[in-house]
Length: 323
Image (cartoon, rainbow, N blue to C red; front, side, top):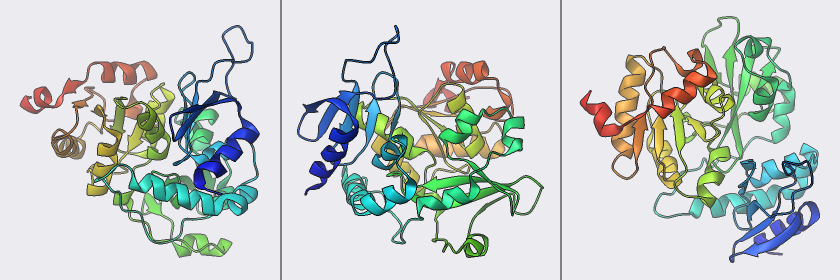
């Protein structure tokens, strides 16, 4: 059975109203939203690629990878991994090849098993104190490591494979952020793969489907995990994090594949300003880029309304650069 046939078989099991949309995509009725009057949705607004597994609902804006689709159907993680592991890799290979020449380098080491996240399936009180809702925390699969007292953030490549776990201390330990290695995961019998942070663009696996099916979608670029989640909670779903101040070569290739326009919303300090200038200069050669203007130190210092106002007042790269 080919890749497209395997994906279509899953679609026929869980989706209704399936119709072909070109040689590689199908449309179906979204299983997650209803019409405004509360009645079941009847119009097919759910798009699924049979060759990459990416999907998006053009009405409710939910989107993701084939793995996240299966998780949304409440299939157990161990069943998903055992039944579809080979298919995941085949879909990822297709995704890596499209489009040329912007091929994103993927680590050769095998990804982590999704069940690893179950070790940290707790919600940090610190996250709630910062103003994040449980819904936002769960949307990003953020957990809490009770042993090491760190908030855990899953690190995925843009095709959705779990590449590693980053932990942020809540007790002022050093370092503040760290990517878990064998010392951290070994006690649970898990071998930590080598992770190059420069090759990961956090939340890209959730944003890329929107740009895949509808080019020209605005994408917001921030520095950290918290800023990414805060902008998302303010209602801006297409937001990715550099997990740092500077745009790497691989991150640049991923963003160029998305197409933009891009809104840089980095921290309002010297490192953030330099990172903004560097990243925007690189992307401005091929994409439309703007910068969000605000007075506070970082996006998480803004209210939800303040986040939206900063983006609404964004300046184009050349106007900002003249300042």
